[in-house]
Image (tube, rainbow, N blue to C red):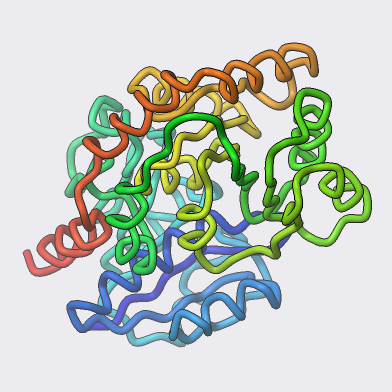
Length: 335
């Protein structure tokens, strides 16, 4: 079988959609499915796709910018997997008119109708979102899309004792950081303590490098990673954005505090926090520096909070949720 993943990934768009699509493509490959990535990709995204062993086709425009027939005329495909916040009902209707079997990776159930074959939503609250009847629904965190290296290293990570004071702190906002949150968080952390060894996943930045130099030896900017397996095993705790990385941290048993970059992430982070799987730092655009600093202090100083979070994380996820998702999709495709 051949699947085409239609997503986009650039510094401006971000890399979360691509990362979870690669995770699903890796899991589908275990069942013999060949995958091609089609979209608007910058050089870093193309490298990430190639390093995972997949082919890519460059499109000049992002998802839902033109006629679907032109986009998919060049492919022989058994099914298409779409992952973009630009998807709307008309775009899905266009794909349906081509007799293309489609899977939509979704987060928020924003459309009134989903003319597709399968909806995959791995968020914690997905089973409660009330999707319309029709598509096969693959919902909930037991279908979290995780890279194979995370799956392979999870047992090592969750067995790490993350008790007591934090020594190694990971800051990982996401594939892009348009709001400069890594810099903001590092500055606020430095006003409270400089005993930490801090790794910040970020692009080269002289201001951030200068702030990190004030922390413990080994503190540094770490270039964007194809996966965070090594960094998450290293970390005693993490500060993340409100997207995929907070899920990856929870899956790996790393206590995390998340700062949301938009309202959708903010609502979803609050649900995740209510399940005891993340500490909510608030919405970046509205939380003040004073409030953010206070929340950071609570997260860093409360060892019982982080220990309870790690325990809940270990109990909440199955060993290979990506394989669950891939198998459920293939079962739906065979119907």
